[in-house]
Image 1 (cartoon, rainbow, N blue to C red):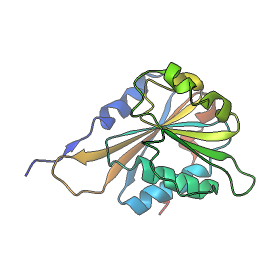
Image 2 (image 1 turned 90 degrees about the vertical axis):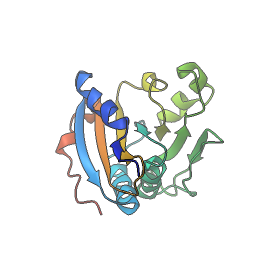
Image 3 (image 1 turned 60 degrees about the horizontal axis):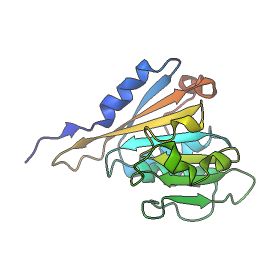
Image 4 (image 1 turned 60 degrees about the vertical axis):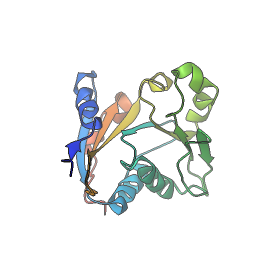
Length: 184
């Protein structure tokens, strides 16, 4: 049996300390249900124009977190991984913002390739969540919330995750002032 190790997201999350003005919060998540609950909690602080970037290994919980965001934002449609369609738009059921859920895994280029999705047009009126967006969508906004989900990799059934929320830009300066736990 292979020993469990930390995933690469842990190192990427620590790199936020090199981003001027970035604010970080580290949270422990013990189950998929807690990951969805964290998504619902995050939805409470999101507003139209917010860019959220999700980073983590396959199976880390990026789509599970986004399901919780959709529940919290009150959007229409089941939130599923948009891997094969690249992007899904979930309109609001009431007066809130739409959720634009993007999976940039299969997109090799940077912002040029992303421009075909018109995310810059959607961003002003929506919450845009991009899985695998590192190095591809940062230019969409000076302010963004980066979510790093770290899980043990290897031969393990451990559901525990370390989630690091990193706020970049003035919009997220108060990230540490929020009450993040408990959310379950």
